[in-house]
Length: 333
Image 1 (spheres, helix red, strand yellow):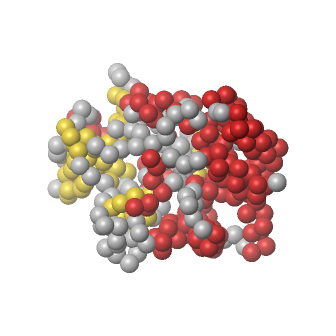
Image 2 (image 1 turned 90 degrees about the vertical axis):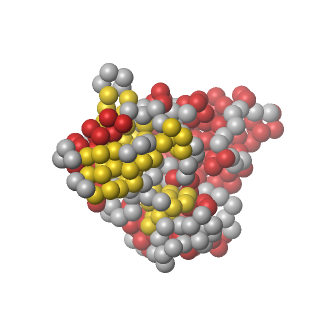
Image 3 (image 1 turned 30 degrees about the vertical axis):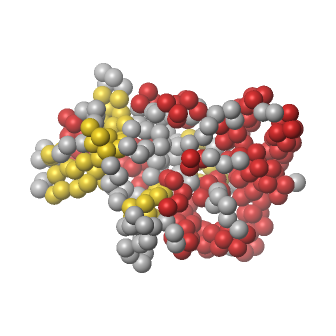
């Protein structure tokens, strides 16, 4: 990952690391703005704490700092600048894989919130060629959902995936249909009816757990992956990033995001099977689980329809969400 000169206040990064480490012996090297970032400004550099050096990423999680494309389509009600720092500080430190928390700083005068975490070198999951790593990621996700991480997140301002939120996505999708051509509008109106009458009830009835919130392959770094997509280690580090929409809701929402893509049935079965084994989903509950998964896939499609209809989505979210919605709705009818 390359970068350009940064506008972030380095003194604030020093303050953040000092407060978290409990020591004044902190030095932060030059910070460079990352050229490749999906939504929030990122800066890379190094920090030395008590003589020990580490690579870091500084993320500006302030709403006003979001890149224009992200600010245009991402609803303001999803944003809480305190959520991601709290997840790293209070929850993820005891979870194997995610980057280590190194501090955060709130500038009271401007409202700017900076998060400082370990820089995990690697590639996004979607750029890794070995399917076994996707299976490993599904296993990681199942273990995360089965853990007691939700207990540690009791004081985090988590996004609540409840009836109000689901109906909010429905209202946004309905409003977006006005930007569609007539044939597509009829297709969307049909799937929105299935979403309203079937999917929402299934999601409300499903058990709730701690969610990543956007567990897409673009939000998973495979630590140790080489530039050509091969692996340095037999067991790579699975490092989910971008926890800004962490929430409480059905576990299948995260799994639905992970398996989004042009997978064949056998590949989907492998990923779902690995997840279920790790999460402890017993064979007798698989039928109900598959129904919840279809409802979650429809929920994601409806959500993205409300975000991107009439706009050009970024490459990692460029899909035919109308087709995705129809496919998921057909499995629920």
